[in-house]
Image: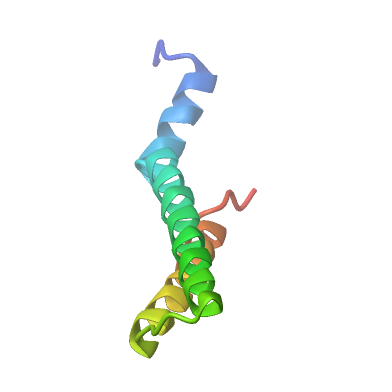
Length: 78
């Protein structure tokens, strides 16, 4: 009865199951890159002998763990 192409219908159904999946993946990739870049900068400051608050380092390490994990969990399951 429907005049919609079956491939388009399948794609639209998939989008309703996981809306904005592409945008979320782009954000997870950007946040992951930012977290690792921030960690690299912090480690270079530590190597140069600068004082660094331990809390900030733990937050950065936490971000380096959380964002790649979210990216991994948001992958295609099929």
